[in-house]
Length: 390
Image (tube, rainbow, N blue to C red):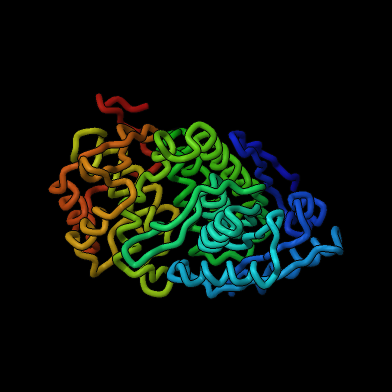
């Protein structure tokens, strides 16, 4: 499989590389380094699978490098200030200078945590994102948003810190658990939901191939998703406007994650699963506010179910508790709750001052023990607001 490259422009331009076997490409990896100090940050799931070949590739290309490793426990609940401090301590032990580089090898948790540490060490050193999950390849590794979670909410402490490069080795997806692959597909669906209804149709047509880890289908989905995100990041690097659209479904999702204590795979939904549920809730809220046709939301839910993703709230989460979490969301402001909603599939918008009653109604409607509305099959004609199929 050939390597595809995408240029991300802006005040700090960088390249996204997508292909198989890239973590063994010493010349590519070493070409991103300005100095001799390297900290490879990973987690206990990913490091045993991929860390050695990264280190071997780098050492082969540049034997003079000083390479240290930091390995954290896996899981969203580990994305804390305490772990952030451990990365800084590892940089201190390495004697990392201002031209040092942090290599973030793993999923979104590692990328967020290591990126935030890189943003803060000596007021900012390079980070190269080496995503090993589909979710990180199509979302969190691109754009430079880094953060850790606090007990009060997700990603409340962080910084914008664009990577020096993103190197997505698709061969790592072969070791990805099925559940994590599906979680990444939720973020792929998100790009179609907010930017391109035709992409939703493409995903539906290739759903079986994506679930079967077909290399060509996955590479196409990754590149197309990165193109959407990179375009938005170029136009709005600090999320003052259009970039907020990338949070479609995330206000609900972050509330779910915070309320379940970031339990993730252990006891609740992981991030991608929470986003899947959040998108269904956002589409339903859009229909309740008479912004969008309900049929588009039903089609979205059908597509997510074809990809074997959840579309209802986990048991035991009270709507009132989730609403309280949303009041602390970064997208809330003085006017009240602010959501990313849509007017139709592929057309998202920011809606401020959303009243709380319809939010509660949406949450109540999608509790796991509540009868769900009829589904349109994902391949059924998509109704327009006027009722004409397109």
